[in-house]
Length: 325
Image 1 (tube, rainbow, N blue to C red):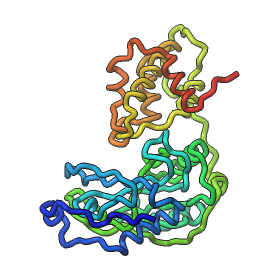
Image 2 (image 1 turned 90 degrees about the vertical axis):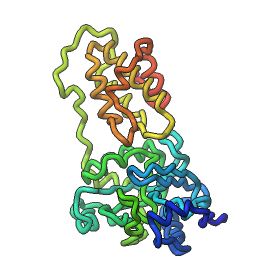
Image 3 (image 1 turned 135 degrees about the vertical axis):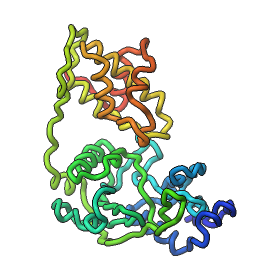
Image 4 (image 1 turned 90 degrees about the horizontal axis):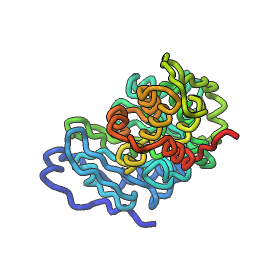
């Protein structure tokens, strides 16, 4: 197997001024390799993203693990990897290897054992990020498709009241072995593997310990409904939306999701509801913010006069939605 090209040339000014004398060794790369091994991931196919600390302005680096260079981290970038297999965008993910959760709003000491309070199985392993978060992983003994994985991952996240960003199939998580970079661009501690049990589970093992999902009530607000021009119901809209993956910033899908938003707006209007309901539904699906890299209200109101409801239906069918017979 090709070994990582670990020791690429650094920008000495940046590396020395920000992080010196912090260093990385073969041992750190071996820890990262073991992290991937615990997930049964192929190193040569693992997607790595090295992302600048907040406000640092460093260009992101994307590569496969064997091409990753130590200086990507030493220059001031956090190191992440795509947990699941197949690519870097949701639509590319073919196999999902684990369920995972993290928290930023409860003490680290509690995060270590909160799975017990929640009556969840013991994690396969945990990752201490080097900051204020413990990542819990439940590795699957047989990988599953994202169609099986995502609904369970959402239920797990909701049940744990964990970070709700970690529900899309192409989610990146911090890779053990490398430095956590704080908001000042300083390396603090290395992320590390802890509490390794190597217990593995079927997706049903995780699913069965979660509460049954509560039925979604879409018509939670009182909207004045005009005379509709379609036989679609809001339940139909919700079912179609569920098949479309959550938007992820940087995934080169902005144009597609703008068309989806405009098509949804057209459909909602045909049903006799106001544009504001379309915005609410899209916000619930792919909320405005950094993770999605868009502003739903702004996108929805930026045009789309010539886009019809059929556009939304097209994208829903593309992602597996089938109309009721």
